[in-house]
Length: 275
Ligand SMILES: [Zn+2]
Image (cartoon, rainbow, N blue to C red; front, top):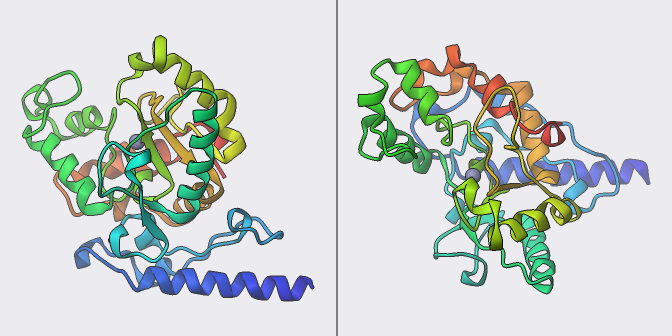
């Protein structure tokens, strides 16, 4: 029985590997090396329920080098749960989210997805718009004017935005809910929502990776929630195989190594979300 289960898990892994490889995207200089791209992810063993099944992802998946609209593991989020059309999540994550949203609704709390999967190219648009000043930072400042030095500018953008290739939003496991301001969750409806999530999200597999009081990484984000049964496997793969030198293909990427993007940002998360 153990051998059969292992075989099934291996088959599932092969399927995921194949599925991911069918959708390479992006430019050549952003593709990881073939030998590292095939690195397996150690996951949890039996029972082989979707959330406990060992999956295999390649690094191009971890780095968002695919089109979620064309990926077999993804599904479009219904408008019932989103503030606009055209957002995608992994199917496993979406199923878990719908259960959580129904439970929240029963308690009078409305969970609305305002951002879901963003691939490398979408993240690159956001990053470079902030880098060039086409889009202002959260305080209204223009990054190139306020921060002429590359490292300072990158650090300022990194308060709330990831470098392309290093975002949890690439994975289809992470959502932004209801409002992109922490103060919204301080009182009233926002506080009720945040209190509900802190109390109940874990029962559905979700956790807040960017909590207050961490030594490194992005600022606190009370709106960002992650489906850990899958995201932790992807975090583990990033921990084992993603290097700062692979984070490239956009303006300001040369700062990734000195800032230690993988160690301080990808892994600089709530310890409960670490592998
Ligand atoms: Zn987010």
